[in-house]
Amino acid sequence: MTAAPAATGGHASHGGGRGDGPRHVAIIMDGNGRWAQRKGLPRVAGHRAGAEAVRKTLQAAADAGVEVLTIYAFSSENWRRSAEEVSDLKGLMRFYLERELATLEKERVQLRIIGDYRAFGPELSARLEKAVERTRTNTRLTLVIALNYGSRAEIAAACRSLATEARDGKIDPSAIDEEVVGRALQTSDWPELDLLIRTSGEQRLSNFLLWQAAYAELLFVDTLWPDFDEAAFNAALASYAARHRRFGGR
Ligand code: IPE
Ligand code: IPE
Ligand code: MG
Image 1 (cartoon, rainbow, N blue to C red):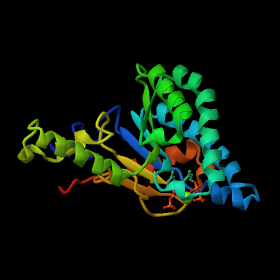
Image 2 (image 1 turned 180 degrees about the vertical axis):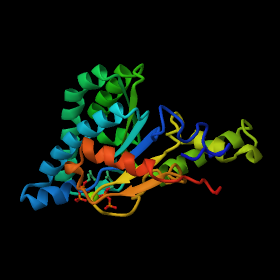
Image 3 (image 1 turned 45 degrees about the vertical axis):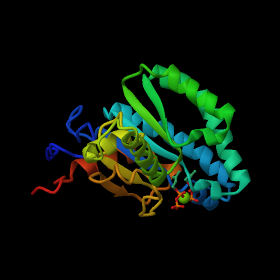
Image 4 (image 1 turned 180 degrees about the horizontal axis):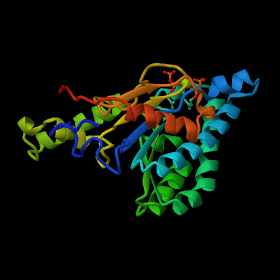
């Protein structure tokens, strides 16, 4: 892999972690609805199968030595879906959070959330916060779940907080550079994004990690998310390993 440049816009570097693989992988888990439709099942069945794909992918990522896995579970635009589908998704989140917490503990996975998850209500918020707290000291892999996340909203919030600091004399506007902006984002604790995967054949970012994806390798696969598994994740890693990252150099 090509070495990262000195300044990449965040506080941490690209690649170069445990071996040659990506340190930070993100996934837009798309295609649950189409998977269900093809089987003549309700959409919720697709979301349920999608949750199983998360388990397999998480295991594969941990086995491969990935440090951070960020998954897009609910976008700030997904409220446009029917009340029934949103309610089904909330129910599944609650169910899997309870069921998988012990696994996260056992596998030493740290759970973190980005996005305005409080919009899902006090009960689910409290469960999420409890799971984050319970797994706080785990270091094998960090699983970041994007819930009610929108990249533009995240960047706007960073701008607001930096503007407030400038108004209050805590930061000089001329000191606001890429690194400072990167640190004001919700992803500031983690290494730069190395690989962004989207399933289901769609080739767009849908408001996910727009800033963070600046130099990420993008991989679009036709597999519908519920069919994604360890082999599919390992194939994605192989595709990444075959690429030549240049970061503007040669
Ligand atoms: C992704 O699958 C899951 C969420 C957005 C919550 P979709 O539900 O978008 O599935 P398709 O795109 O309709 O097939
Ligand atoms: C993106 O998928 C959001 C998640 C996977 C959670 P969508 O299915 O919502 O994206 P669009 O609507 O096809 O762009
Ligand atoms: Mg979709």
